[in-house]
Length: 267
Ligand code: SF4
Image 1 (cartoon, rainbow, N blue to C red):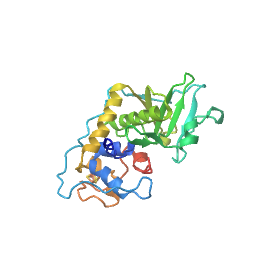
Image 2 (tube, protein in one colour; image 1 turned 90 degrees about the vertical axis):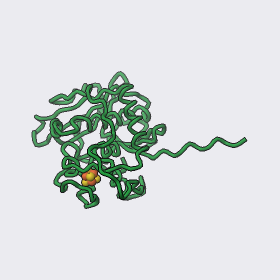
Image 3 (tube, protein in one colour; image 1 turned 120 degrees about the vertical axis):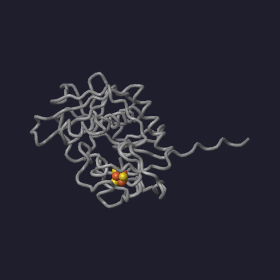
Image 4 (cartoon, protein in one colour; image 1 turned 180 degrees about the vertical axis):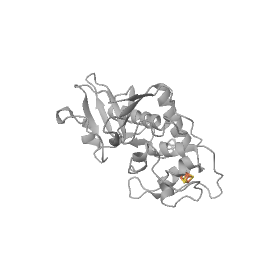
């Protein structure tokens, strides 16, 4: 009797791929094909030379309506514990005293990368907080103001898709399903006065969105450019002169997503 055929290998994806694909699929391809190092290795871009640019990314919007933006300091309790810290990220806020840090055993055995074998997906949140009831939630930090970029085309969508991705990774790697993820904003120029955070619920609808989004990215073998000033002016491959479709010069990191853009590609 013949052995059943091996399942096809999944193209491995990262939260960074979701972010860039949601802005411009070709940007994702340029990031993946020009990254250096062996983990992960660069992958050839699939975008054909005669590709027709698009007006917007084909990725459908994440469920943003339940996300809640809050001004002020993030609510933390004396019994909360820091259970995970991406020590390779610079500039993360110090939210916990040393006695309130208790790193999860997963990190000792597996390292910092949280892996979801089922979805072929992995990444690293900035922080994970544990509550006294055993619950966990990931925190993604952005060193900018809560409302920078909010009124641009994508609004809160970038916050939401990152938080959803990190909640799923916490669930699959650490075995506890978060009910929400946090995107924490800290505007250093505001001396703490203009801090804020976005609470992103994580439920069945959000998880379903993530699964379909990853499948949609993998199924897209065109990964077309979306040339628009709002995308191209903050596109890192554009800063390096890699894109012939650019609609604007690179002039700054994309508002609110500077740390995403400059995150090591191993995420
Ligand atoms: S420069 Fe514009 S069109 Fe080119 S990859 Fe970047 S965002 Fe896409």
